[in-house]
Image (cartoon, rainbow, N blue to C red; front, side, top):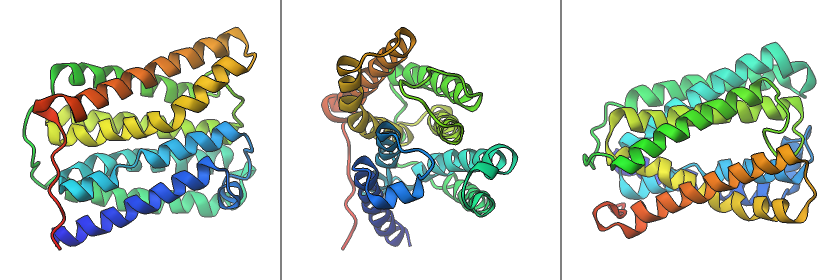
Length: 261
């Protein structure tokens, strides 16, 4: 059974990579889905979120217990989105009621996934290294802070203007991600910390060049320059942390259990 799940996760992971490309290139499929916001960087950000889905790693490594964190992330995010769609932004979105209902159903699916996956024993029982532990604490605080600011519609959180619907959706994404890191931190096992680190690294790789280009090629107001600079610093730090612990440090390098034929 688990081998079949692993193969399915690999397929889903490949599909999310395709979605990453579709959103990054702002292809018609993405534009039709994200019709209320035409800004290129909003599509790049959505691409980064697609890239951050660590299904490929979970499928290849067989660390199925890591699915619990993703299930918790999406449960929180989708419940929040459903509430916001029905209460705040549904009237401004095409098919708002249908989308809100889908979010609730998807939240229920991910809640069941969370309940199932957290019962799976963690393969890699090593403790999370201290620097990763404290870094996750900082990431969680930052994700919650930015998420709440976006939900409240604060200006200059991002370096480009966000329509209200986009700001709310991105806000719930950040808050859901805080639970993603929080679950790994709570369990304290390296096998559950790998997926968040890989997710952050993929997210970083998609965003860093467009953000650096924006910082050095566009005349931004001071507050937006500051927020963008801070964002880039977080991207560089998190990418460096992931690269060191996942690919350089001998004690924590990635271990892959191949899917049997």
